[in-house]
Length: 188
Image (cartoon, rainbow, N blue to C red):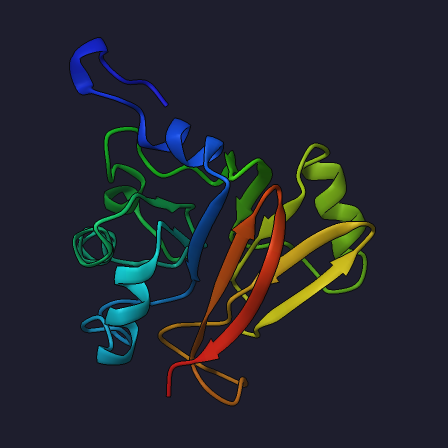
């Protein structure tokens, strides 16, 4: 993260060092065709989050602004296949296709499209060899599991359920360098 010297403390550095964090994970909001505003049921969880992760297909950068304003917390995102230059230019450092960072002593990676289900763990390990957790989206199907020793989390879609039973998001509770609790939460 490129920051000017007078920009103040880096919020991500502080989040890397904290012992406990609440992480809210979203993907595939597909605004404005499927996401016109933050669902009322998501406002409380956003306000309780220490950081918000969006795994792509934002489709409108205002979604990221709305998430940051509601959460009052940093928002990290990656580009999805439906995101354009306006989403890529969001924020002081832009939105990349892949990203790696540390939260509460855990190494995270994010990508929108992790590829086919078969071989996903092995592929994510090759793409992100240092990661403890990989967050991804694209399929619209929620998933939380361990493959090839790597925790994989797809929150499902917060905007367009497609073949999933409902729209959803994920909440990860981090404590002392591990995931103390993880849940996929239906939105409706």
